[in-house]
Image (spheres, rainbow, N blue to C red):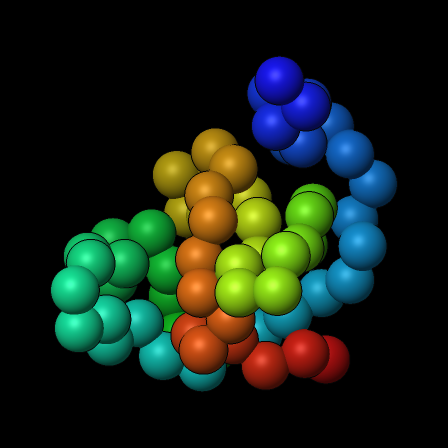
Length: 67
């Protein structure tokens, strides 16, 4: 269960949220457009970041742009 330790991992890079308008999911409570987030892990489709709830969360890459 490697994902249990992602909060303590080094930051890979930083990304900026460009929108929180999800079609299927509610992300506007955990993401703030314009805010910069630290990426703790990344897959082909998702960034795993520390979100506004101070917990690790996986979000689609379409909500962000790389800095």
